[in-house]
Amino acid sequence: MPNDQNNETENLICDVVCVHPDVVSSYSNQVLSLDRATQLAELFKTLGDPTRIRIMDALAKSEFCVCDLAELLDLSQSATSHQLRVLRNSNLVKYRRDGKMVYYSLQDNHVQELYRQGLEHIDE
Image (cartoon, rainbow, N blue to C red; front, side, top):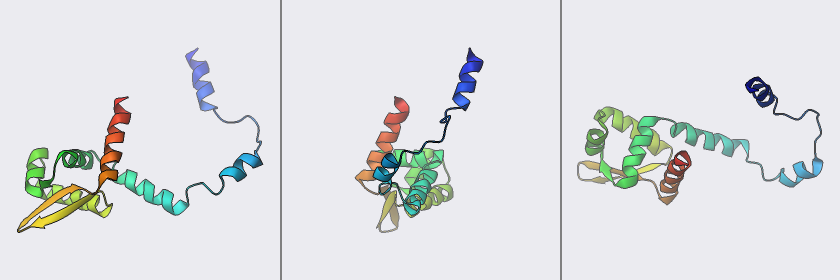
């Protein structure tokens, strides 16, 4: 039986070509543009790194300076700074200066929600 399931899984496509023009036309103006799809793929690629996810996890709990974040996650300050730059370039985190200190936090509630929903999804 497992071989039948494998064969069935490999062939989960239509057996004939039959386009439904009414379905296609009703959604043709709603499909994500290639530009937006590329931007979203870049966002998910940025989120595809465990170190960056751990940084986001910490920042979802509190604002941290680079030194404290590096210590908390057992990373060098250089590695932490590099990952924060990647997250900042994707508008996932923001920073503020306080004298000689730089503090990071999540960019906004959308990022917080994206992170929270990702956790909920893997915990299901």
